[in-house]
Length: 369
Ligand SMILES: [Cu+2]
View 1 (cartoon, rainbow, N blue to C red):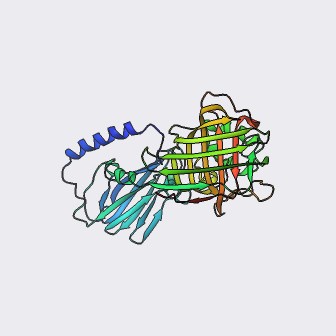
View 2 (cartoon, helix red, strand yellow):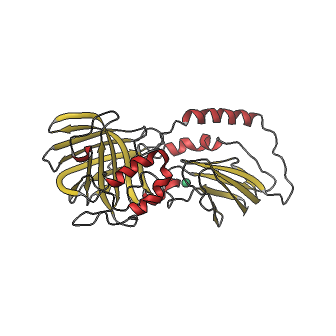
View 3 (tube, rainbow, N blue to C red):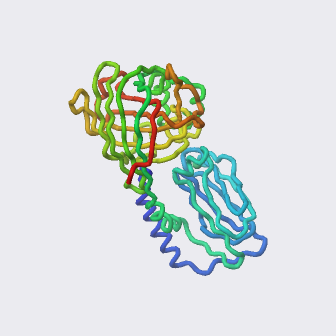
């Protein structure tokens, strides 16, 4: 997985500043016994930054600021301790004072059953014997950990199965549940509210036929990739073919801050990650890609915007109405394919101008390497 905000340059500048600061650093200031150590923390999408990576054992006060745009929280876990703040709204702060023994502690955002943690909101804190405290600046964690994390490649192969349904425009069936979440979506709210009235997250479905198989690789950094083909015949008899060969790295309307391939994530709905117009689900894979789309053998576009998920089932057997607002405990077998026109391209010649297709009994495996 990777993040699409334009932070790398700023990070690079911060790292340079941090390096300069480290060169100029002198011996750490001693504090009187009994004085709590102070650590400040910044939460944002999707990272946790600590002012220090290492503190002396004893009482430690964390001052935590949410500098992001959605609610977060702060948890410290390790050496038998597991303590967290309440949820912190964007622009607000909280403090947490703990007595910490020497050892390594995991520091992360616990919102969304670890979905924020999986998206990158985690780091660690070393607590050392009281006399050998050493502090360092923001940014050192990225220097020491990013390369190791980038090597972690995971892969999945997904095969479609079961009934195939095309989702047609219609009202979203959980408007009361979605309303409080939509309030936090700022600029996006208007578009989402029109999708509540008549959009692609509806109970208005029709059985069709087709198949979809793909393999996807989550390689960290910017090397995620995908390879797959979907073929289906829509309600109107049109034959569609979609070839996937490259992941998408820029913001997608209504899918901000995401790109590439993410394996194993719990999100949507009330976790406030991603569009709230999908119930809360657990996913084996979520990916964003560009696709080559053909209709009846003729190329429609090389830039179709594609979002794919294999997720815990959201729809009923039989009539395929959305059946739950929190579907995260259900079996993971629903394969969703969502295809939208590329930026500036005309709507597809299909109801609502989009192609949303589900395969209701799909499966996944690790691909042979
Ligand atoms: Cu968070």
